[in-house]
Image (cartoon, rainbow, N blue to C red):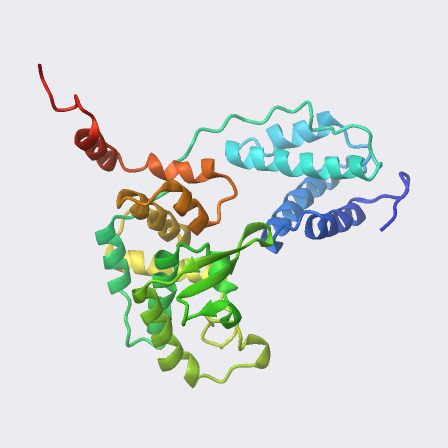
Length: 309
């Protein structure tokens, strides 16, 4: 889409920005929808306050007022996300020669403390898995979903989009399309493979499925693509049954997958490849999670930890 500086509107600029994020940067639909949602919140703020500034006219002061006043009750991480989104958007406008400056350059990003994710113990994972009622019509599917999330460390978006075209049972491998549409190969463990096969043979193969959903592995009770929200509900229902006090999500199984690998001796580079992390610094958080594990490492390997001279 071609713009002139006088004709550009927020909606048109966002549509073109979405195309840029898809084609040029190869971002996932989920990431792009997040950018769009944050930009539309800014537009709603401008409309509500009758601020008539188009994308090439909006000032640093206006954006700063929105971020630190309109959203002052938001977490620092939310404010940081807004700034990151708007910085990318205005950099895109500069790239298209629609602006010469980025109004977010003078806005300081809030300093974020590193938050450790929720990790379940091995016994909690076992309780979670065993809590599933296999006599329920979706019981075997739910068990297979949790076994796959924990057994292969998938993101929930990767699980709901998993297709039979990318499942290779003979080779015991899943081909996963992760963030940025980057593919990676993830092994399937014996337990995960068992429950996936059981779900396919005992549940899925007895369902009437429309052509457009036949390649999707995990389906809802209407035999259509299962949603991320439904997977979240499945995990939380199991947590309630097990009386797990922590607030958990499907991502908690991915965090637990990585932590348990490292606690059992896996090297961080291998875990990075399994998780599909672009940077190893993202994976390094899992080396800081278990104080008891780190204490044992110190006691076992440091020459003077347990010696008094």
